[in-house]
Length: 86
Image (tube, one colour):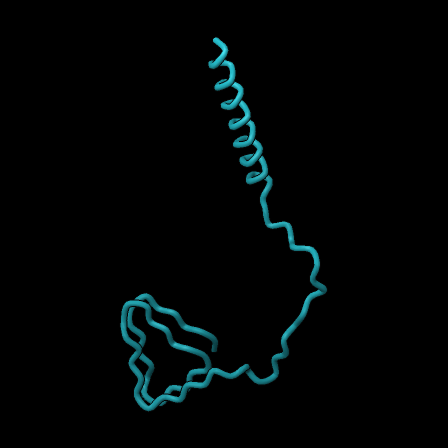
Protein backbone atom coordinates (compact mmCIF):
# COMPACT_ATOMS: atom_id res chain seq x y z
CA UNK A 1 0.00 0.00 0.00
CA UNK A 2 1.30 3.41 -0.88
CA UNK A 3 4.04 4.38 -3.26
CA UNK A 4 6.95 2.09 -4.07
CA UNK A 5 9.96 3.94 -5.49
CA UNK A 6 12.98 1.99 -6.69
CA UNK A 7 16.27 3.12 -8.14
CA UNK A 8 16.30 0.17 -10.58
CA UNK A 9 13.64 -2.27 -11.82
CA UNK A 10 10.36 -3.31 -10.20
CA UNK A 11 8.65 -6.61 -11.07
CA UNK A 12 5.19 -7.48 -9.75
CA UNK A 13 4.20 -11.13 -9.49
CA UNK A 14 1.50 -12.42 -11.87
CA UNK A 15 -1.96 -11.52 -10.60
CA UNK A 16 -0.70 -9.20 -7.84
CA UNK A 17 -3.01 -6.45 -6.58
CA UNK A 18 -1.22 -3.19 -5.88
CA UNK A 19 -2.81 -0.28 -4.05
CA UNK A 20 -0.65 2.74 -4.83
CA UNK A 21 2.06 3.41 -7.39
CA UNK A 22 5.14 1.58 -8.64
CA UNK A 23 7.83 4.04 -9.72
CA UNK A 24 11.28 3.06 -11.04
CA UNK A 25 13.79 5.86 -11.53
CA UNK A 26 16.47 4.17 -13.69
CA UNK A 27 14.72 0.99 -14.71
CA UNK A 28 11.46 -0.57 -15.79
CA UNK A 29 8.24 -1.60 -14.08
CA UNK A 30 7.22 -5.10 -15.22
CA UNK A 31 3.57 -6.12 -14.80
CA UNK A 32 1.77 -9.34 -15.77
CA UNK A 33 -2.02 -9.46 -15.31
CA UNK A 34 -1.90 -7.14 -12.30
CA UNK A 35 -4.51 -4.88 -10.73
CA UNK A 36 -3.31 -1.43 -9.70
CA UNK A 37 -5.49 1.05 -7.81
CA UNK A 38 -4.51 4.39 -6.40
CA UNK A 39 -7.43 5.04 -4.05
CA UNK A 40 -7.46 5.98 -0.42
CA UNK A 41 -7.45 2.89 1.76
CA UNK A 42 -10.82 1.92 3.20
CA UNK A 43 -11.39 2.88 6.80
CA UNK A 44 -8.89 5.71 6.95
CA UNK A 45 -9.85 9.29 7.44
CA UNK A 46 -7.59 12.27 7.02
CA UNK A 47 -6.48 13.82 10.26
CA UNK A 48 -6.07 17.51 10.88
CA UNK A 49 -4.05 19.26 13.50
CA UNK A 50 -4.75 22.51 15.27
CA UNK A 51 -2.13 24.18 13.11
CA UNK A 52 -0.38 27.37 14.05
CA UNK A 53 2.98 26.66 15.65
CA UNK A 54 5.61 24.48 13.99
CA UNK A 55 7.32 21.85 16.13
CA UNK A 56 10.85 22.59 17.32
CA UNK A 57 13.06 20.25 15.31
CA UNK A 58 16.48 21.85 15.87
CA UNK A 59 18.79 20.03 18.23
CA UNK A 60 20.83 21.83 20.90
CA UNK A 61 23.97 20.94 18.92
CA UNK A 62 22.57 22.76 15.89
CA UNK A 63 21.90 25.85 18.03
CA UNK A 64 25.49 25.82 19.33
CA UNK A 65 26.83 25.36 15.80
CA UNK A 66 24.77 28.30 14.55
CA UNK A 67 26.02 30.48 17.43
CA UNK A 68 29.62 29.48 16.67
CA UNK A 69 29.26 30.43 13.01
CA UNK A 70 27.70 33.78 13.94
CA UNK A 71 30.56 34.55 16.37
CA UNK A 72 33.11 33.52 13.76
CA UNK A 73 31.59 35.93 11.24
CA UNK A 74 31.59 38.78 13.78
CA UNK A 75 35.22 38.03 14.63
CA UNK A 76 36.24 37.94 10.95
CA UNK A 77 34.52 41.28 10.35
CA UNK A 78 36.30 42.80 13.38
CA UNK A 79 39.66 41.43 12.26
CA UNK A 80 39.13 42.84 8.76
CA UNK A 81 38.27 46.29 10.12
CA UNK A 82 41.28 46.24 12.46
CA UNK A 83 43.63 45.33 9.60
CA UNK A 84 42.42 48.36 7.57
CA UNK A 85 43.50 50.82 10.26
CA UNK A 86 46.96 49.35 10.84
